[in-house]
Image 1: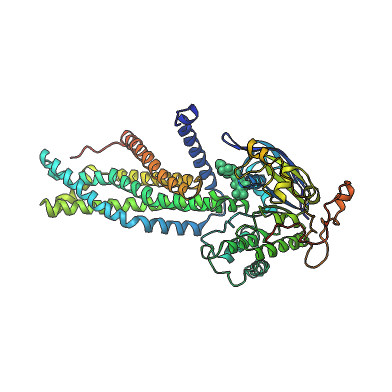
Image 2 (image 1 turned 90 degrees about the vertical axis):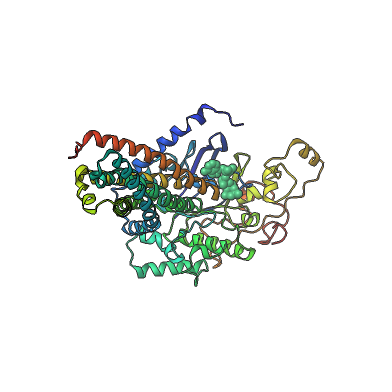
Length: 318
Length: 262
Ligand SMILES: Nc1ncnc2c1ncn2[C@@H]1O[C@H](COP(=O)(O)OP(=O)(O)OP(=O)(O)O)[C@@H](O)[C@H]1O
Ligand SMILES: [Mg+2]
């Protein structure tokens, strides 16, 4: 049914190296949430903290009443059964072929017979389009295929929470849009809570219910998709519209000179907000809201041309 | 740049502490079911396959050198009747365990550290933990047991090959008499020597495997991190094994009454 993730005042540093601080957000049960941020802002670290692979220095991550950041090893292994995780590079077990990789969680945690396992594995392999590659080793396939295999493995135990670390990096644009559709369809089907880390602004504009932006060692903004897409906040606006004008520079922040040079440049107008990607069977997801609802409720006028098409305001080249 | 801050100076102590904590985790996981029999057999086979041939090759010159040295020395004393016994003692008590230690750490341990290190940087270990499986129970315990088993075998191998090499040198090259060589075996050596050799091999195998697993599982920073982990694991294991060998030998002489010959 999906489970809520409540993150409170989370701070993480490696030695003296502060990664982020004071991150507070709640991912509502069953919704799709995308975390964005420039490279190296600790998005992967945040995901790993959510599953207890890394311990935060401060704060708590509460899932079903258990604080993952401070619970015992035993509780942790128990609560992890709720999760399906897709790692940045798939993290397939190198010594097993794809079939055994996907079957692994079933063999470990269920008492299903081999024929039942075969049925489930084949269904998941079909879902991610890997039929025919079952008996390949992870070393013999492309990065994109490894990623899809990782997704199949993450889904095999019917998780309540699915974490995706950059599902779309290393995939071609066609596969990326198939994957986005797959994510939305999956959410409609299993109603799990999805947390997706990505750089891809296009996916981020159309897929999620909520968006969070990590920037400069803190959570710059977190909220409904329409709130961030209509936001005038410089960082949010620059990142979500993939612009050069704004406070983000090539290496983290721009310095004062660069910002001053930009100050007389006209900011381009906010692009229209695209329609949210709907499940392919046309039945709305449980967490889906009517287009424009948030803007209406909050008295915000969306940029002209909003909610007309799914491609509105997409970055060029897609 | 490289100033010696207290934090840096104390880092080795921290590592030693973590290594010890890791060893305790391994011992605790030893008793968790289900036991990973398949992994254990695979690893035993793997470690044996990378160590047996180098061990045999090292053991022959080891036995020969000891036979030469001991043989020469003993001639000077005029106690030829003890040659066999002396080389058995030297091989079984020390050469066997030391050669085993070198090979288990150098060949077996480095292979383990490289394997686990690669899994660590590919995030396989993270994936395993997320799938609710403890890598210590799943991967480390079978490797530690496999290393101990193989170390015992290697110790036996070194002893046999070493004694045979000693026999060859003494009888064939130094004109000793076969009967005297064999007959003197029991003059100074005793059964306890074999037991202590065995025990040493077990302990060495355990230490080598635990250090290798620890270094591998804590590799970081990409492929270079794996190389560093392998390197460090071999060096640390060598240091530890020589110290432990000394301590165990000293204890052995204190605890077990020695034969006086004759
Ligand atoms: N185990 C670790 N030990 C020390 N530092 C780490 C560790 N893991 C990550 N870091 C540091 O944390 C920072 C954030 O890393 P992270 O991988 O989370 O970035 P990211 O936002 O996922 O970037 P990308 O989008 O490129 O994947 C980096 O500066 C990295 O060096
Ligand atoms: Mg990352």
